[in-house]
Amino acid sequence: MAPGAPSAPVRVLISPDKFKGTLSAAEAAAAMAEGVRRVHPQAHVVQLPIADGGDGTLEAALAAGFTEQLTRVSGPRGSTVDARWALRGQTAVIETAAASGLLLTGPTVESALYSHSYGSGQLIGAALDAGATQIVIGLGGSAMTDGGAGALQALGLTLYTRDGTPLRPGREVLPEAARLGVSGLDSRLAGADLRIATDVDNHLYGPRGAAHVFGPQKGADAAAVHRLDAALTHWAGLLESISGRDVNVAGAGAAGGFAAGFLAFTRARLERGFDLVADLVGFEAALADTDLLITGEGRVDAGSAHGKAPLAAAEWARDRGVPAVLVAGDITVPREHLARHGIVSSSSVMDLAADLEDASARAAHHVTRATQYALESAQAAGGEAP
View 1 (tube, rainbow, N blue to C red):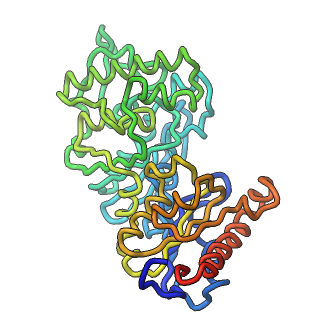
View 2 (view 1 turned 30 degrees about the vertical axis):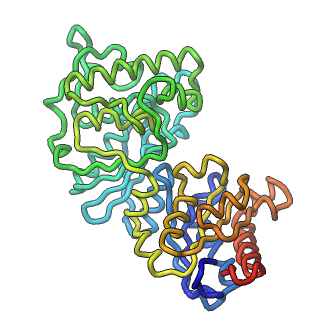
View 3 (view 1 turned 135 degrees about the horizontal axis):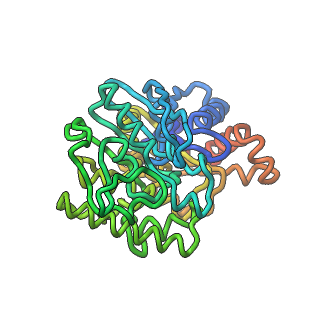
């Protein structure tokens, strides 16, 4: 544990991300809290789920006191979807996955080519209708690669063909778009603070753009990837021609390039996902009043250092003199790597469960055991243990 920290923590902050496919962040936090009570029954425990700006952002907001809202919108292929979002005061939180998610359509070549973000734009409209002046948009788990065109159509943008025919969302509208009509764009967007959370630095188009990097995950084959990348390149040119803004920037490739259109026509800004969520849920204030952080998620691997919530949270704690314990479904990085992020002890479900089936079937039980084990292991290490 960090120098000067108590041998038995009095105040423990539990802030995990989701254990994807098994436990929500809130469920994981509850399981971890049980593990803490087994080792430190007198500790004051605060549960504050976090996320990295992708799917799970909404759950973190709800756990932090936002109120759930439900709006019926168009799904990524046009079918009706009842999409959840959250509101507190004049701040709204939406996820593109709720209205335009891959789980709503499945990964196929057709879905990769024709899915759109119209429903996500409808959620932004619903937030504006509710009086929101700040809208946090979590990207991740999306089906579309439409550069945010569908969402902007829902908010009043018109895409025209060369002969002046308005284009409807879906199919491959971007290659056919020759002119944009902005006069119908919702005027409230001009005054809205759009904060777009992303944990990737991919550009809109190009070899590391939305189509090449994320298209295959959405079902795109090589030919579809080429068509999508060409469409996004064309779309970027249209946006720049009318707005004067270059939208092929780092981070714009997230969620099928969703942010691109908003970067062109609004005051939207891209923010590191974890930092935005931390601000949203009051993570820094909670951290200032704690002796020990416990964080985690389903899998911690080499890619987790690039903005994923648990290691980002541990770094925040480290920089403020608070030690961190990591509990995850699986951990594939060495302890010395974790130590650089401020983690003093760690444990994984896969080290304790009989097999993967057991790990999934009894996830909460094993997370509790892993938390207990991590705390006990740290204690056994002598003066550096919590």
